[in-house]
Image (cartoon, rainbow, N blue to C red; front, side):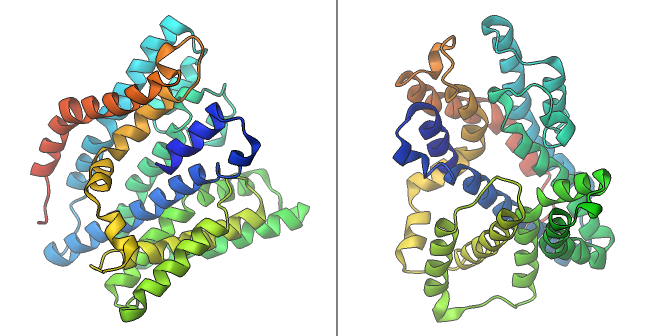
Length: 327
């Protein structure tokens, strides 16, 4: 919902006073990364505890069934619309999106296309799914070292590179920038481990920690700019997002917990991936494409994700549910 609000303001509200809230879009994606890292690590740890191992084949199959069907359906739709409405999307750009490589610098330098620009986040997620659970199964200590490196050492290395030009080796800089994309995910993973080890338990102070965390997350203003100040601030924001996630697992009487468990939010949560995939098309403000015009686009933003989920994605989710190795 934060991403939708950001895109709507950017495209349809030229009022300068509203531009100040567009940071909510990148923040929303980062919150998603933290949640994703936390969730996947939690599921893998549960499976490892219950079965003594992690069935990587089943894990990769389940992730593929969740991510790929609607991602490829959307891309196929855009290919057809690109031929009809001439969105000027290069075949190479489609290639990067299909291969989940849109987050690489070389792909970002190809012709930009708004309609599939959000696939950089899917690429980051897919690469996380491919690498992190493998490390968690095969090399526990290497997994911990990887998380610590991404969370703490990579931002420090980036700061040193920005302050000392003789450290700016192209290959090293490219690697640092690539690893920074996983910062929020790594923090989510780290919080899952801390929770399993019993290091996070605020008891009666949970509500106060959650309130403080919300203030920090919204007040510090997440930035998608790649500079050393933003890197450290974004790290702090991700850490406090981790506190919000872990505190929200426990039933509570506070307003925030009740808000997160509203029925409408649960429904949006179920549809959130579909909404995220399809919103880019209907919030494009392309004069050639009628469904992206207000207020018609609001109708399509509601209807298309629902149709996509209930009449297409659920078929693959049923297959995915049969592959669960832990209950």
